[in-house]
Length: 132
Image (tube, rainbow, N blue to C red; front, side):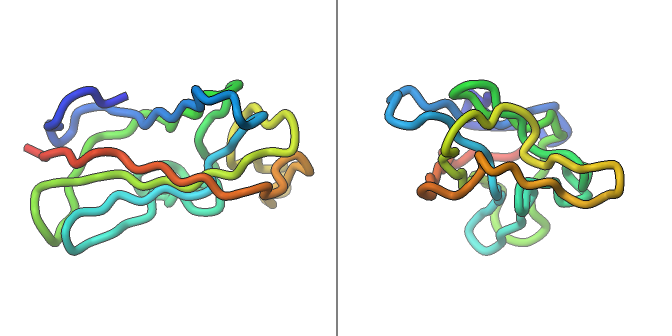
């Protein structure tokens, strides 16, 4: 959880999302991008890491009404200004969906839970943070 308006490059951080409305049963991360004034980079796609910021077989953890990313080193995008913001897309689960958003079976294929059926998309966006 970032509770400041600036982030030191290389600092260990993680993203945190919580539903405090009690209007949904559960939710799971689908995608997450970091962006600035000209660039956008997806660090999470289809629930799984991009392979650079997060390992490809690792996703965000859901526990009840809280979703947490793995820890990662803060960074800035190569093009654009020194600010970053995070924009994530979640799905409401039809039922219980605790665990990793990127569940992988031993044969390397992703396993989709029936409880992860997209009920309605949920979008969340952080404020802008200055990288230094």
